[in-house]
Image 1 (cartoon, rainbow, N blue to C red):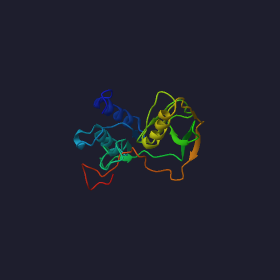
Image 2 (image 1 turned 30 degrees about the vertical axis):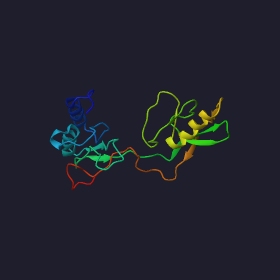
Image 3 (image 1 turned 90 degrees about the vertical axis):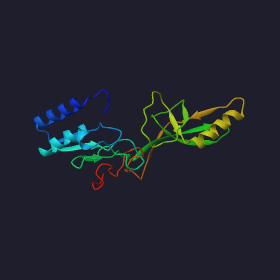
Length: 186
C-alpha cells in the first residue's frame, strides 16, 4: 500500500461500504507484488465483503508485461486488467530534409518536444505537450540535427487513428499466474 493510505483506512472503507449495503466494491489500489493473503489488506477487506454477497473488483496492477506480476491473487477478488482503447493519437514531424516520422502523441496537439521513449505502450503522465518515439527512429532525427548548421523541423497536429486490434490487454497491465495460489487462474 502507498504510505498515504494506511491499512486501517482501507479496512474502514470496506466496513463503511459493507454497512452502506453496496452491491459492488471496486478498488484500484494495491501492492507492487503479491503477499500472503493473511497480510493483504485488500484481500482481507474483500473477503469480508464477499462473505456478505458483495462483489469486490480489484486492479491486477501495472507491473506488466512480465508474467506473475499481479498482486491481486485472492480467489474471492475479481481481478481486472488495464486495456487499450480503439484509438491512438499520432503526430508527424517533418524534418528540413523532407523526411517524415510518425510518433505517438502523449498529449493531444503535441507541439515542441519529441523524445526517445522505448515503452510506447506504458501509461505516462507528462507535464507538457510531448511525443514519444522509438529510440532507433529518434536517432535518425538526432542524426539530421547534427548534420546541418540550421536544422529545422515541424510537428504537425495530432490525428486520431483507430486501432482495429483494440481492445486488448494493455502492455503495462499486470498478469498471472498467481504466485500465491498456483491453482487459481489470475
